[in-house]
Length: 342
Picture 1: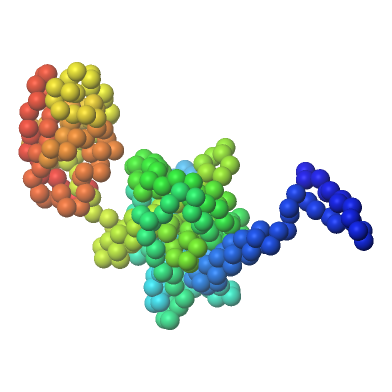
Picture 2: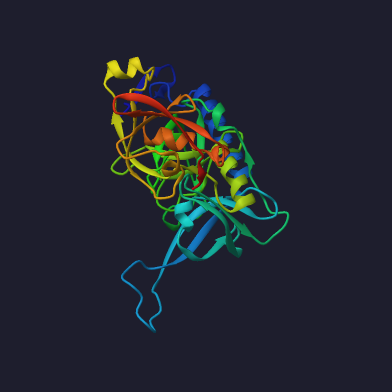
């Protein structure tokens, strides 16, 4: 607690609190407030509440009995004037009905254009024209310590605003389906259930991320998908309704290589993917990949582990022959595989 000091002088006492309310402090606080207010006024009208009705999980459905409905909600934001909305995949997954509430209380039924659990992103469409919409920023330009603002509907409290700073950039986060997602922004802007899918905004009112998760049992550790990733995913979802990824048809686990062996093989990562099963008729089976093989490279790029293999098997690899570096019986061999769409 700061102590109040009374300074005696001619004509009475002057109150001071360690320099509190100095003009430069007031000016600084006013600048901070102006930045937050301006960003919220710019983005707020495009932020929506996403209401979802889904069937309750449980045992198999009995004849003649209707499934019990479960209600949930999240956040989202309009990014085109004709009603495209970006939100989290986990907000709308398994939904049988989705509706959106805009600023001012207007309700609109929404359709799911595309959903990608691997990046926890989804695109919705609502009816309308000349709707308020956000401007995308560039998440690669973010700097640690930069001011960011989160807008959403936590715990049902609509149009809630929190502010904080970028705590870290370039984090990795494992989504609900187990896939590792890069380009994650860590912030201390407070998020709560219902914030999912809402925008993370910079001081200029540009969206730099999609709020997606908080770390359980932690305070001030909140995560957002970078808007550069979200923009790429959204464009693919609009075109195809899904994200196309390559697959070779194996299940495996991470395995470490002894440091001497890794150096001898020119593999600085020192790891690979031990093949546990090969799917019948898969590209891997057709190429002769077998259980017990260790995949250590793809087209000369070190794999390192399962996440690295997933990262390299992108859309551009579908139908294109790739060379897998494989350890088999203590020797390295090359195996040519033609990945298919997952």
